[in-house]
Structures are given as structure tokens and as C-alpha cells.
Image (tube, rainbow over all chains, first blue to last red; front, side, top):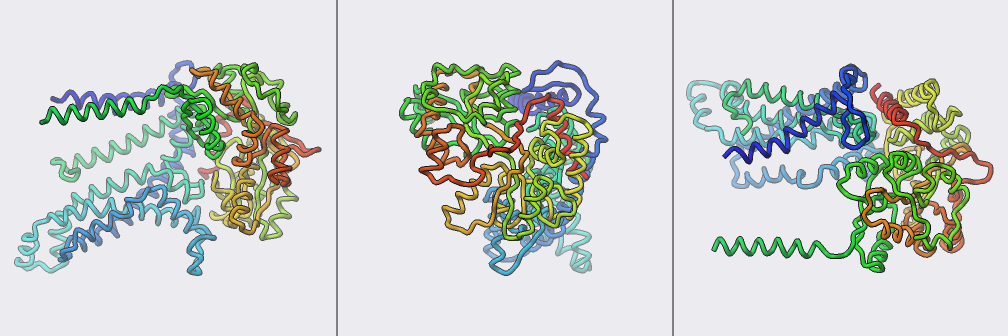
Length: 264
Length: 359
């Protein structure tokens, strides 16, 4: 019974993807009157400073965010996986609490904190960071950190402790045990965490828009702005690039992880 | 047992479907956010025994996309003049049947408003709603900002040596338009060299330190009022909205609005799309909002300047709207309206804003 899945795939993924490809290589437009003709405009756009800048920004902010999330997230996940408390589940659940509130609300909250006149004036503090990289990175890390912690925590928590005991018995020190046993076994979680963080971060648009003072353009912003201003062709081109990057990352993972463990 | 549960579920779904599908005729309205008193819409629903399905968007372009998607067959939309020009030239609007608008006989539109569309091709497709200007809202705490704004006009927004925190509108038409007017060109300029000059002006002001210039939309007015920005490009109604808000909260007002002598005037108007399936009801809706009492209550709620003289007088005399700048066309001022020139021109403005942001 693979049919329902095939129908689903066709309607939800295949047809829209074909539309995007068609809109990239032709004057195809859903909303405007147009005369159909093929165009190679997208080739020129791929070397346009507007596109290159958005691409560079996406890699930069998403890359930095993912790296910082990993640096903070791994120790946190390690800590929670190893605490011996009957409230362990509660502590982990508390990490999810921020995700319960809407992301837009959290973005606007950060935006207001980074403006000179804000609620933190009550504590005699005042930031003036809108438009600066550091503000965008802080906000992005706070948004995506839970997505890094959970996959790593899940792997570390499930890990067989006998392996660590065995390592100790065989004479490995704490660091050596971590480096030779724990870390390699948690790689699956790390890869999942990186995907879960990197992909949404690359296509983020509300966050850089608000915290970047409308001046920091990522690929997501470019798509949004071009769609709402009627440049269907350009929006489709950028979407196609994003899809290719994601497929590329996906292919990499499949290549290194033939059993598909990391994606589960 | 299973069958019983299934039957109950089916019945439940069916009854829900019946409840939600009342026999009342529906009127689909597409409008900007915060641009109509919804209590008045409720009154209209009760009076006419209809259901109004009300949707909001943030820009003219979004309105255009929603209409062209064709998912909802809108009966009423309230776009701005240049978008009405575009939509009517694409045969997407249906002409107004003035004989259905009985309240028209009771009111007089300002000639400063009617002159904006009367002689245009799209003049027969609209009934005006509100009008206003684009200008500079500034914080009055620092006397130097006021001086700069009054001396430089729109150029105060694009001064690369300015020490002030400046907010620009994230809309190609408005921001590029303000740059063009600072340079002394027409807001509708389609001259390559003039557009390039405007682009260089934008690049210069964005080249300042990161926290000094930023783009925004509805958030600009609040930031100027609170002092997070010194000055910003806004619509006149943005400013008035802040004034009313601060008056209601009895807070001190530390901001003002300056409309340069040569500025853009805009007019938003009711239109009835071609796809409307209930044109008669759509006319009734427009007619309802032409009634002086309803229009006054609506104008008080919205805060923008009504185009109807009788309503304006009520606002000024009875509601206390004797604010400076409330009337958008003071004697002796130059006001220029946006025109829809071509899709290529619209895309060029779009590209200018994208380009200056990628440096």
C-alpha cells in the first residue's frame, strides 16, 4: 500500500517543486497576466550582489548560530543526561517551556530588549544593538538552542553505561573515555542537532528582519520580499537554491550514515 | 460499538457543517489592519442580515496577490490610488454604480481628494475612503532634530553626516519616493539618472554606523514616540495614531510631524473587484460607510483624515480634531500622488531597496 504516500508526495512536494522550477526558468506566474517565455535571467541573478550577499549572510549567521548552539548545547545535554535525580524529566521538560510561546513573540521581546528605551532600563541597563551581528546571533541561539540540546540528550540518555564502565575498567581516564567512547557514540545526535538548527536558521526571516533593523537580508528575507513585491522569478530562483542546499546537506548525511540512525 | 462511535462522529461533523453554513449572504472584505471600526461592521451585519468576512493585509501588493490568487472572491477592497490604477487597467475591477449609493447625495468630497482621481481612467472604479500625506515624524526631546527636520525636510532622512537615529519605511515606493523628493524630483520619476541619485542617497545614509539607520513599518511610529529613533519616514495617520494613544494614556507627547512643502499625497478608496458575486451588497456596504454618522464614528476610530467635508467638520468641531497637519493639503503646498507607471518601474524601485541593503 504505497499509493497514499505517492499521492501525498505528488500533491505536496512534487507539483509545487515543479512550479518552482518552472517559475525559475520561465516567465511563469500564478497571479499576473504574462506571456510564457523561457528566461535565463536566473543565471545572471545568481551572480548578482543582492543574491550573493543574502547567501553569504545565511551561511554566516546560520553557521555561527549552529556552532554556538553546539558549544553550549552539548555540555547542557551531557549534564542532563548524567544527573541522577528523580526530577530529571521535569528539568528536561523545563527546557521546552520557551518553545511553548510563539516564536514571533519571543523575537519581538528580544527586539525590544535591544533598543535603548526598554524594560531593562528599570535595572539601569540599556542596549543599543539593533542592526548589530551580536544581537542577531544572541537571539538566534536562544531560538534554536533547544533543537540542538534534545537530539544530543536523546542519544546520550539512551547510551549504554556499561560501555563507559568498560572503558574505565580497561584503564581509560575520564577524558579518554569521553573522547573515545561517549563522543563517537553521540555523533548521531550531533548531526541531527546540526540539521535541526542549521536548516531553520538558514531560512529564518522574521528574526533577522526585526533584530537586524530591516538591513540584514538572508535568503528567507529575499524570498519573502520578492514574492510580496511581485518578482516571482527571483523568489523562485532563491527558493530553488535553498532547496538544493538542503538536498545537498541531506545527501551528505545519507552518505555518512547509511543506516539512517541520525534521522530517527 | 465501533460503528456507533463512527456514526456519532459522522453526525457530529455533519451538524457542525450545517451550523457553520448559515444561509446569510456573505460579503468578503479585504482591508489594511486597524483601518475600519469593526463594531460598525457588526452593525452593518445586523442591519442587513448578512455575514461580513473580514480579512487584513499589510500592503497594496499583498492585496493584489490575494485578489489574483482567486481563492476568495472579494466583494470589497480598499487599496491605494496607484494600485487601483493598476488593477483597473488589468480589468480586475468593476465600475461603481453611483445610483446604488444613495448617501452620495448627502455628502461632498473635498476637491483636494477628488482631483487625485477624477480625470484618471480609474476614476469610475472607486469611492474614496481616507487620504493623507507622507512626512517625517520626529522626537522633540532634542531641539536639534526639530531644526534639522524643518530646515532639510525629507533630506534630513538621508543626511550621511546626521548624528541622529533614522527610521526608513520598508516600502520601495515610499522610501525611494522620499529620496526623490529630497532631490527635488518627481515622486514618480522614471528617469534612470534620477533613480540612481536616489539610490546613492540611500546608500550614503545606510553607510553610517549600524544602530543609526534602520528599516521598519508599523513599528517606526512607536520608536520615535518612545525615543528609540530621532526621526522616521511615516504616513500622517501613523503620527495621529500615536497622538491618540498617548492622549488616551495621558502620557507626555514628545513627538511631532512635519510634512515638507513638496510631499506625496495618497488616497485609499473602496473598490469592487470584478470577481465579486454580490455587487449589490458591496454597494450597500460602501453606502453604509458614506453615511455621515457612521463615517464620523469610523474616522474617530481609524484616526486618518476623512475625505468627506461634512465628516471632517464633525471631527474638527465635535471630536476636537483641530490638530495641525490633520488636513493633508494646506494652502500653498505641493502635493504629488503616486502613479502606476509600469511593472518594470515597480520592479526597479524594488531592486533599489534590495541593492542598498546588500552593501
